[in-house]
Image (tube, rainbow, N blue to C red; front, side, top):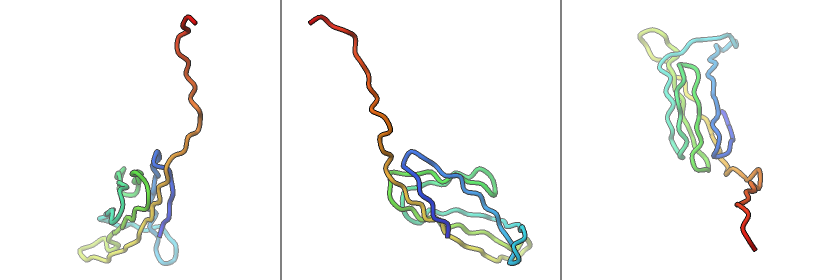
Length: 103
């Protein structure tokens, strides 16, 4: 399980890096990201790269599935992302002055 945290003003790049049992690079196909809970969204960049985009706040759970059998069969791999979103805080006071007026 991958656990990530950001504010509601951010998004998080997530990269898939499939490995064999021995830790060597491997290929998968039919990768699917499914938001099970919460209001985050997933933007697919390509087969191995996505952006998880924050919603209003709170916890989102995202299921990721892929097929490890590159042939006719299916060997499903599954994992989850827990994405916790906090509210962005003020970072400046943002002063602004109006035009001078007569007293």
